[in-house]
Length: 218
Image 1: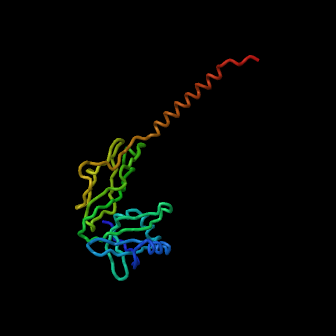
Image 2: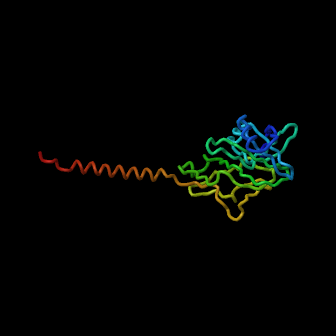
Image 3: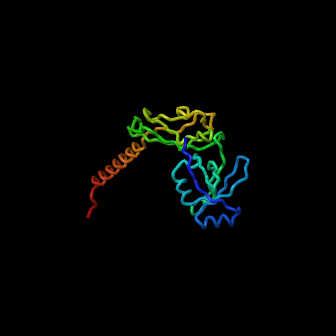
């Protein structure tokens, strides 16, 4: 289960573009807390702290306790909007949740025991199809990551969702097929070496032909 992270925030008294721009000028990112049949709360969080959380990975599958004044809200990030020019966050949405709330989240995948995969040790390449898996679970049971064991996998083998031991109560949202998460592909360097060898052979042939050509008469 992912840890619950405390995130301080200030409450914004007014909504709208003007107050939102003022918050950004002050180094904050405007946002909103909504859901659970309660009134939304307009908030602002520190830009630097939000950027740090965004770049640390797993942001959208992490539960937060947002402290607004003396109150605390248990939330899950739902959306972040970015400036198209600066790529800085300009707005963030949080959904109120309880322990019993069922949520859909993107959970990152991590790969273990690459050095115990004969395919990878022999020069194969790990081809990752899905860096995240969309899962449905209770808000208090969100996995921090999904671990994929690569031990024993050969070139040509694939990792499918049916091969992953998910925690109890955690289910993939895609249930109509045994989708692929990663494969062990053959190395492409072999083809490159063959092409280089062919080019070298052609160059040597041209050089030999030039050496055998008769010299021009003076």
